[in-house]
Length: 154
Image (cartoon, rainbow, N blue to C red; front, side):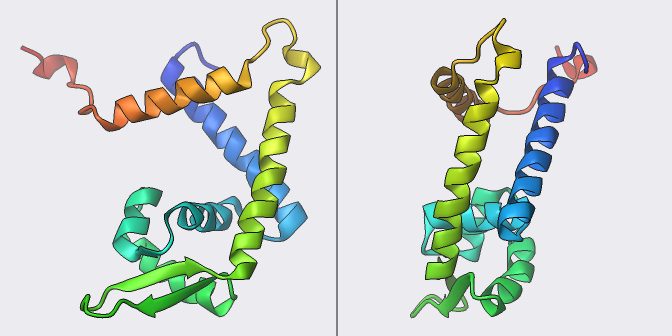
């Protein structure tokens, strides 16, 4: 553990991702990365590859590379968008939607249980407040430029 907020946040996110990955692999046979792709599409569907890439924070090429496998496995559909050149619209299949609903509920419950664990009783975590604060912080950061290195400040 570090006394530096940036390192602590990074370590926390890595541990939460690993926890989610293990739970999803054990319960559903999918990785967290796989689930996250489908969950983001669930919220944005139908979405073209550019929109989905933006929502996931990856390149369009990264999305394009994953699509054929997800289509072949029956998680998503990909259809040409009429009159939009080569634009392809992605949507979840019923199988993909069911995974997002079911596994998403399991993860939400597991994380909520974790936040209310007796080991944290000395400094209880208010989950709804924490979520609201993280949403606000994320929105704020999205609207900000990155930090200026000390030597470049005038």
